[in-house]
Image (tube, rainbow, N blue to C red; front, side, top):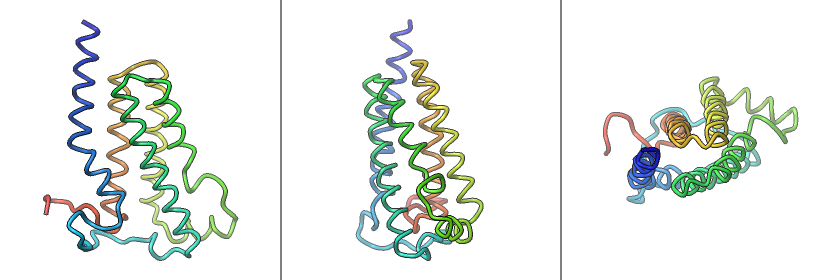
Length: 171
C-alpha cells in the first residue's frame, strides 16, 4: 500500500513538472516566450535598485531557480537527502539575510515593499517545511511544501517580476 501511495505522489510530481516546468523557465527568463515584453502587472521595485543590487537579486533568483529544478528532480527520484540540501540552499540564499552592507540593507528595505519581504519570509518558511518533510522521508509532505514554495515564487513574480505572469487568464 505504501508503494502505491508513493507512486501516486511521484505521478503527481511528474504531472507538476510537465505543467509547471515551462512556467519556471518562463518566469526565470527576461522576455516572454513570444519575444515580447509583457505589460507590468504591478510595481517592479527591483528595477529601481542600484546596479550592484540588481545584479545581486538576479544572481539570487538564478540560484533559487536552479535549486527549485534540483529539488523537483530529487523529489521525482525520492532522493530525500538531496531535497534537504537544495531546500537549505533556497533558505540560505535569501537576499535579505546576509552579505549586505548596512547601506545596501537600508536601500533594500526602503525600496522593496513589505509585501515583497513577506513573500520572501513565506518562501523561507515553506523551505523549512520542505527540509523537515524531506528529512523525515515524508514524500507527501515534501510535495505540499514544494507547492507552497512554488506558490510564493509565482505570487512574487506576478507582483514584482516584471510582468512575466498575468492574473485572470493565460494570454
